Image (cartoon, rainbow, N blue to C red):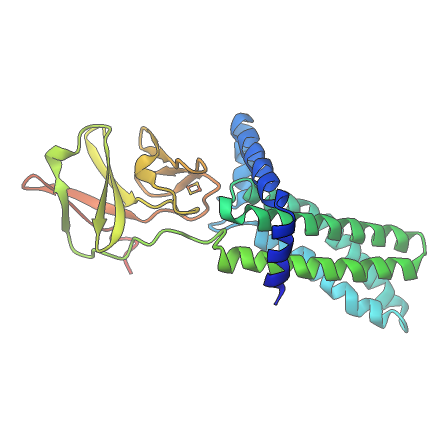
Length: 293
Ligand code: FES
């Protein structure tokens, strides 16, 4: 239903795609150049510590407050306490919208090319909604209640359309979902290549039961994880290696190859890691036993 309108807007305003992508890349570069402190803040806002993106968690607080304010505004026609509740919920939504927007901007900074236009439109709609709700809160404080409620109604319409677009980004375009496919097989040791063919500091991509697996040798030890970046599917075998860490070539997530854990976002999901051994000159792997189900 709304998808046709969205496609129409994106066709008519191609700058949303091109400009959105430029803004996203500029933001990402600023984060990378900002030093370790900025990177830590960015990791926090991505949700690297949470195990999945932080933005959708925060949107629940903001949208919950604004959506709840609407029925209280209706009840406010006959109840003073309902009016006060609506006013407080409106302000709560405005306050929580700030970290929600920051987390969303960070996720947008590493959005894939094909989703940049929709991501930019989502951000613009949210900005309009925030301005409308901030205006509503101000009007309510100035005792211009009718104007305040009108601003809220407009804001509710805009933020609802934007929430729908956010769902499109996640469920249709797979922004923020886990892109790794490996990690369940093989349960038993399986040969994946000759030990002699993997030199020190070399990365190799092999297929095991259809899953791409990254092999990497460092200081004599061999590590094996999914070769597909959990953030958006980047090829980790083409990444930059530093000690036991690999940096994704697409958006610079960093993973520890010993455990598959995320060291730096935007990725929030760990990589499946494998047990590795060498038998009769063959590298063998199996799904890591403590994580096997
Ligand atoms: S695909 Fe985005 S960081 Fe790897």
